[in-house]
Length: 131
Image (cartoon, rainbow, N blue to C red):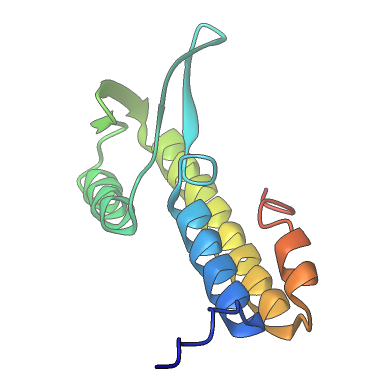
């Protein structure tokens, strides 16, 4: 009877593990979070999913179309009333931040795919360059 060969971790295994870690980090609150400030104090941290951003964009457009100058919405568990122009700007800033994070995540994945050793994959910093 022969025993099976012991498992040897391959470069492909290391890359797959690192790619999963990149995806986990990309979905984490380290990346997907913004602070809600009140009187120069952080009162909460939250995030808006792409669907929530699209819904709020529709709400802002509707408010502007009917001539409203303010809009009430919830950010996380915090109710806020904002001028429509401020809400529009806030949503645009969140979207641009999300776009920048998306690009960094794609760059990290491409960089990991190009690495040529298990050691290099292990040393790769998946947290670098996020805005």
